[in-house]
Length: 197
Length: 197
DNA sequence: CGAATATGTCAACATGGCTGACATAAATGT
DNA sequence: ACATTTATGTCAGCCATGTTGACATATTCG
Image (cartoon, rainbow over all chains, first blue to last red; front, side, top):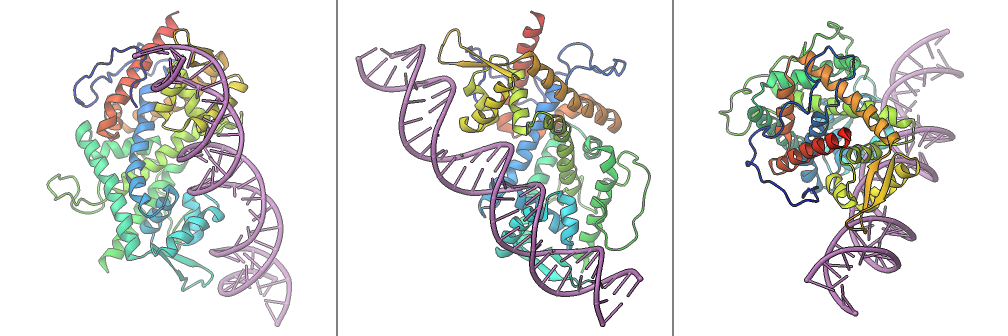
């Protein structure tokens, strides 16, 4: 990022004391909830979120380059891994994209042997999606990278895992929270079932 | 998102007790740092981050539609607002995009009167960028939306603002942290200077 | 004065969204 | 049994936003 400053007064501070220069306030009216809804913009949080997310998806991005895959492929692979035998319609519902968009990346993931399709047993119109062993390996590799990042962040920031979960959960639109929770716990169960076989 | 389940056993739980069903573990080896680097993937955190960010940028997205602007415009507007009189080269450095990409959105922001350019005083090759009053208003509106989300999330999750800052900070690549910190504090100062005039 | 720098611009291309239209097979309802 | 609905796929084209490469202009600097 170099330095945005025009002036030469660039001070190398410490090598990264966690949260070092980011003190908890850029002025006055902040913590109190008694202001009339006109609180100061939280630029630090906004920008930290921006950069945190950039790096969070950056790890996988680098790995995916090896296969000429992009983020779209990552999302598909991830959710198919998490929901073995998922129907196309349900995957679309999670990703909130059109089937035409999905088709493009899905095609490549299937051609390169990361995902496979099988006909539904009960409803033969359905094409149930699941990862192959190769797909599982890649999905796991990517998840591990992101997990490591979370582990480091939690340890270094002195928060608990639980707090991180609750904070991120509370960042989600209230209307979606239930759906997200249900989706996560359900996937956990489905995945556990897959393992124990 | 409807429901991914094929089976009909969909249980409406509570209306959203914060973190309700998201207990702190999907099995065994988790909290301890004593495992050999092969900890279980933190799918809950990964997916929560995904949805949290989606909604975090969703708020601005909706507002920006009014002007036929996208996220690219938002980023440019935001960072120009935060760094009055920024040079084009420095803006490119923050955004990490090419000047051709920047040119497109910048052109529209200037045409519609959200950003203005002026020739550098010391170096007349430079075109210093700054928001207009109209641009300031929009940037503030968007920042407020995101600030509200953070405020709610912090309050509802029972974390402190400081913990949120430290957590997000620790999610950033160590090599970038210093740069980000410097950028944020510097922008805070520059913005404060603008105000006090 | 010549080289380096700051910026802009033209052209072409990639990725990953989108809409609309239409095809096919299987399930479902009357 | 047949008509309708559902699940999925596919063709064609558009849009937003990123990329590379090449080149033009003005200004500063050694």
